[in-house]
Amino acid sequence: MHAWLMNGIDDLLGLFDLFDLGVLLGDSSTVEKIEALWRIAMLAAAIYLYGRYLLKRTAASAASMFPAGVLLVYAFLIRWLDVNGWEHIERLWPVFLLGPALGFFQWYVFGGRSRFVLVPAVLAAVTGLIFTGANAGSAVFPASEWWPVFPLLLALCMHLGGLSDSLPGRLLLIPGGALLLYGILFLTNSLMGVPYGQLWPLFLFGPAVGLLELYALGYKRWFVTIPCAVFVLLGAVFVSVFNIN
Image (cartoon, rainbow, N blue to C red; front, side, top):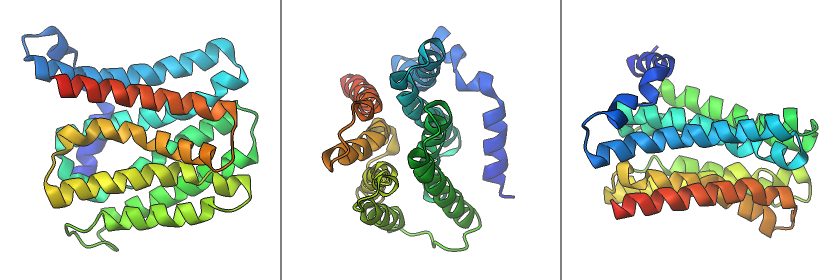
């Protein structure tokens, strides 16, 4: 197993380090405190959404389990990349698919066990795990500045599936839309050199893009707007804070 993967496991086990309380409470600079705060904020938002469901247990609160799962995965992934270096995104980009996969699965478990939600959960999970495994072993994709083409091609395939008349097919627009935005951000870094330290707040808009596509293409359900609003709000807040600072 690669050393970077072992280091990642160690970081995930060290939860106390994830919260960066020493940075927040110490004499660190304002920028360092903001960088620590957003990691806590992502986890705090996920915990709030979990608590919202546990307290209310309604259809609306069940829909909030989708962004809760996405935020949980992204908080751990982005934290690991901060510690070990964003250059590892070339291998770990498929992990971004595991966020929607976890969100869909939680929505399935706590929202009535609809197979229409389970199908995209399984597809996103299988796809994310396969590509993560392939990248970890360098078995498929050579490292180059054009590596973001692969997630863009995968996003295109998901969009083609999302144009079907069936609901399970349309739900592929959610991970497909997110992956489309991520591919563009990856290309922006790879070709233009814009650091991920400046780009990361935009990753929160990924699931919102997919949800908006789903809504725009005919699945106009009120519970789709709830997780979409969560991601747009969080993304807007973090983009504004980092632009100000």
